[in-house]
Length: 131
Image (cartoon, rainbow, N blue to C red):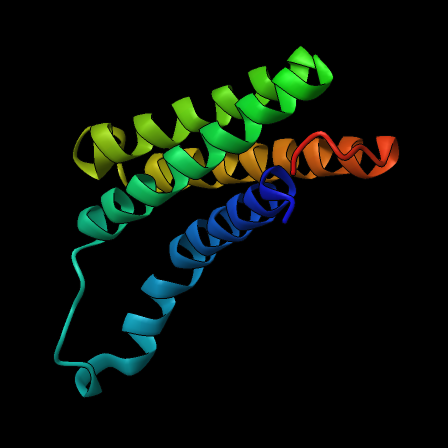
């Protein structure tokens, strides 16, 4: 089983989940108005997603760097993670709702792009160094 490629795929999926949550959960709450009695704390959801995103992303990006020595992929992924950290820990109270969502979307997009490039490099080189 190719763990580095699978972790890149999982990290891309988690980044996509972050972006979907950021874009669609507020709309869902508005559209459901009185029908939805339970509301999830957005900060808690972001923190939980970060708990999953960080280890998977770091594993995939560091493994990719160790195997292929392409530093810009690692650095861009790290920048995306920093943006996610800032969005979560500064939150809407400091950043405001729009800026928090913007940082989250930028961070998620950069992370997904980095993992996609990591995945492309592995496929292009057709390497077996990740088994």
